Length: 120
Image (cartoon, rainbow, N blue to C red; front, side, top):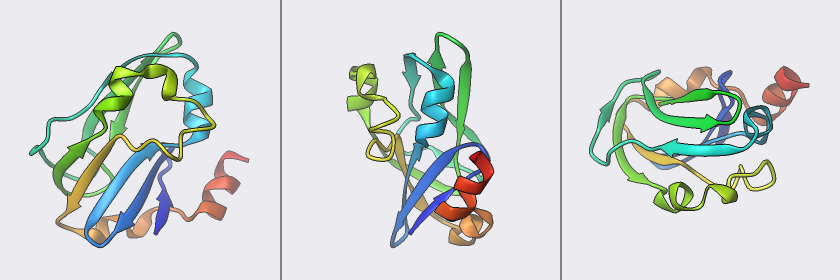
């Protein structure tokens, strides 16, 4: 199940695990990414917590947890190869995975059509 936030994050849910990334639109808006800070595995998070940071030549941008749970994995390959973060690859590159403790936190997120209308 793929969902989007107003903050331009995407969430792909499989069972009780949510992979979180940023949308192609967000990557375009940020421009060239110069630094990524990912959360620590084992970190307990609440819905809306700032858990990662993207820094670009234009600005720094917080990435928020879409739901309460625990960070169970991070995509360290992205931090090692910032050139992999492009609008074309944004939907393939998750940043972190959250084991959901409250899946209903995702109920207010948008589906792909609603998100496209938001950024359209």
